[in-house]
Image 1 (cartoon, each protein chain N blue to C red):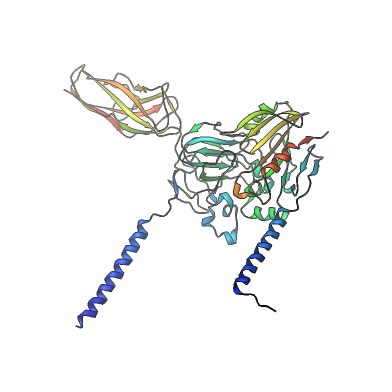
Image 2 (cartoon, rainbow over the protein chains, first blue to last red):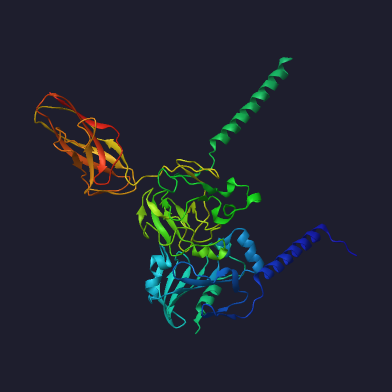
Length: 195
Length: 326
């Protein structure tokens, strides 16, 4: 049997490490695949989740908060193990970066989406945010870019409810492997209010 | 010949000492990275709250863990304010983030995006953040510039808070976040009146009060004849957090001469009004007035002290005008 020369051994080691790295990368990113539908019976909507995106049970909360918020659901590409890891270090801020979020609020006074989106108490406010008219799921909506809580958020009114459909990218160094802003945009664009 | 090695040895020792001294001087001459300063404790003057969590750098994070050991919050402080306690601006700045629509949070990370908070941009590349404020309690408006000491909001328990109800103030200074970012990595800070306070201590705030004044100039020694006029102007700096208005900002007479709120024979009144319509914090107010030589010769003193009429007298620094009526 021919023995490996030192150079060949080093090369083999490098290739081996690279292969392990590629495996780890693929495992973290998850298998690519077609979009799957997620329907929320509680909040009354559905979205299409591309590839490895999933509903985060850790970051979602179907409990009321404040006077009007009913609950929210969060969608992440992180595996449950990866999510648990970043919650531990570097913390919740990282787990909340590169996620799509659907919130439902009570809107008993039937505020228009634009009025709601630009009210500092209801939606918050950030210097430099841009609010514009938009359409989502065939509904009149307000789109806010660079707001205080979302990178992009749509506000959609339906039957006494205000949906906030958005995503956060926050810090680029907290971007999970495989996550893209186009995936987040696709999830938001697929939002559909269900009866 | 015996002396040669000794001289060499001495020379070597001298050279080594020189190198050591130079190295030491170089080390001393290189300043450690300074903590961000110019801050006052983020609550009203005279109040004290316990430090319930220090920056992670001052914790044994490997043993205790803690939210200030990770992420953006490594240089943050938690103060033991309770729901409804007033938060004050630790530094002047402009409100660039404003979220105040949420109620009580929980230790659950699901509440991360439901935190109420205010961010003040100091204008020097850094911003202060005031986290977990109470629902609809903000004392500032989006885009408003506020002076150091200005009320920000009431403390609360919105967002990720552990405990029951877990109310506290989470405070940090961070490089000003870019559009679309809620927060960035905090930096080391120190408070003017407390330095870098330790866990469990309760430093007393020396933040700015609403009304405060510091004498700047104008006091005069005047020689006058009977009925002779002399124009003069008193100058006081607004060192509080609220703006002074011409409608009620005055300097008033005080003891010992002519006596508290007494009419002075030198100016024929007990009050002198501010000349500017408004004087913002940090600006200097002018109070112009005429001194008239009284009928009787003698030495007269006119003690004056700033006052916001109907609200409060400000600091008495013993400022007086001296008139030698000959």
